[in-house]
Image (cartoon, rainbow, N blue to C red; front, side, top):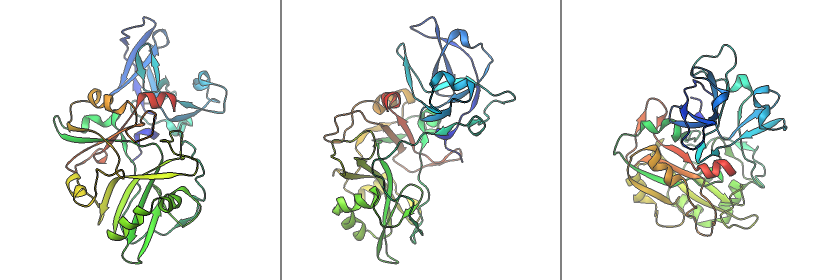
Length: 326
């Protein structure tokens, strides 16, 4: 299944008044809110929703307003007190509602550059454990999948490099990977992080065949968390054994979440609404010495649950302040 952050879906414009500006209107695409200039659209027009963190080609005339670079990046924009989660542009002729026209329009997902990522292209065979590609869907699109009053936890989404580590009992070796591939030992942030944090090797060796998923942060991307050049830290956010992710209670049995090795807990309690969780997506990072905003939060039920639309239920809600600045 294609991830919603990589999509550009066609939807029907239906304008609502903007509470603070007569020249602006609000339109909704599912649970997404967008701001438009009132006179640019009429109800019933077909539009393409271009999400934040998309890159678009300005050779296509509908994107020329964004700038003069060959590829321009779409961000969230606050317009008279209301955040617009990306922007709508006219749909290509012949489009139909809910069609994904990203490829047709040359829209790609923006991948922020990483500092000193190193030899990321040197891949190796997977270890003898099940650990598939790791990705998380957009909560602003799929938040409706949570059940009313379902008990959830929201942890800080750290801005860095997705990573996974495992000590395989078959070959008695630690294996290192990014969110897609396993990496040969080399000069890259994934292996450097393991070297910078000796506690990781100790824990992995003591828990063979447990795949640890987490985020490498520090001198990696635009949010540095108080780190100096060349310094990397790691915080885990998921554990997997025999191909199954562990529920919150099972994680607590083998990992000390109170230590500074697990992603910070931002909220725990009943699921109420997207608007409710959005307040936790915004704000400053809870990582000590960060002194900057957080990227957002990841929300999941405390009891593992799978749904037909996306599979495992866990969703990311990015901070609007982050999406508008970074």
